[in-house]
Length: 280
Length: 307
View 1 (cartoon, each protein chain N blue to C red):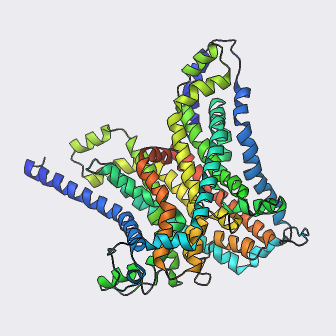
View 2: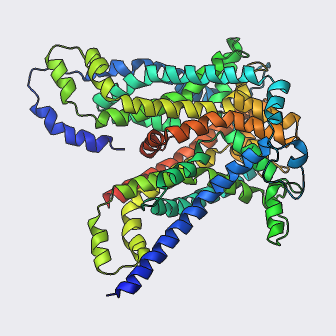
């Protein structure tokens, strides 16, 4: 047995080790995002200075003004909002009942299809869908983007909802059925309200992974139908050296997602832990 | 994954239900019908059509003669393709091992109670939620050989400048670093979920026996949480094989073809050279590689569980 003094020392060392671990683990993320902020709020001279300037003095909004003035970022933002909201909304409309049906029918096998969709590289959908949209004359509109984003959002929603509905106790619905409700009513008025936290999780994750998607946009979007990630990538190709606007553009794209993560961290963590979901 | 256990638990309850009740199983399928139609259109149709295209010489706006397995035969002697496979496997090995090791460490750390834990965990998770294109751009600026902040930091430490993504020898390890930075949080979350579900009594016994934290980790936490580590590793393998956004934005497969993985080559073949037939054949092979690896991992996991 250790003496009390030694035990206290051990505990102290444990605490120090723990906080050391936390700092080491968290600092790559913190420093990265601070540097991103620094780049986007510095003027151009400071951004290309060597040794680098770390703290913008004075901070400037010029980079953000520049991004929206030189590029049609407002259009791209609207495009992204339309695509991600539509793809998420449609996925909820289709995926919540589907998750319920699969969970209730105890059709675990159907989940395998979702799993395969999760495993398939996003690119492999693109060649056939690209041709299909070309034949249909839809290239250059937002429709192909909404449709392809369903490839990301539907599996996420179905996957999370299966898990959620399986976890719900079935008694309440059975009581409703005994009382003469049909199964749609049991779903709509009993199961769905209970599953609301799950629906929120599914919605947030589907939205984020749709918002972040790059690969579908880069192939399918035309000049005026770019989503934000594609638009930002184009800032890189055309203005290789101006770092300020580039960082500002990157921040504009990812800020909504980062804010959503900070605000809804509990739901997001819950969703990611169950599914290991990722789009594309 | 929990499907079988939940079903088993629910089975006796179902048998107790009043007899003469309708069997709803068929009706429940209707709930899945609309989603099934969409899945068939945007997920299953592309699979089938890809296979069809892969046996044709398919270039945009041209005739598309049937060529049998010629596209597949071409791959066997296509050095660029074979190198892409080697690079993909090399990248994947790094992009699985590093995040899994660090992710387990992070999970053990975040399983403790400490001041600011919620906030620290949220910050730690940010890289995997952030838009990949956006973070790739910032990494690109940090890698700049003359003006990049990383080489400056090295010079502060009196270290020579590093080639990062501008050197054919260091480009893949550098991309592995980006991938590790981005995806370690996912491993952490999955393993942390596993650790949270562990029973506490082995730990109490171990503390009484005077086990050190390291012994507790090595002999209790790791073996008990192992199935979760395996799941996390499996997910990492699949995602690492498919990595596209970061590599595309940061290097586009360069310098030269030094970081051209299968996914990048696939993109170039189909959408830069518009050789859709050959691209489709690559997709099929790529898909089979991923599927085989996934099945191997899942089979392994079954064994873990039955053990």
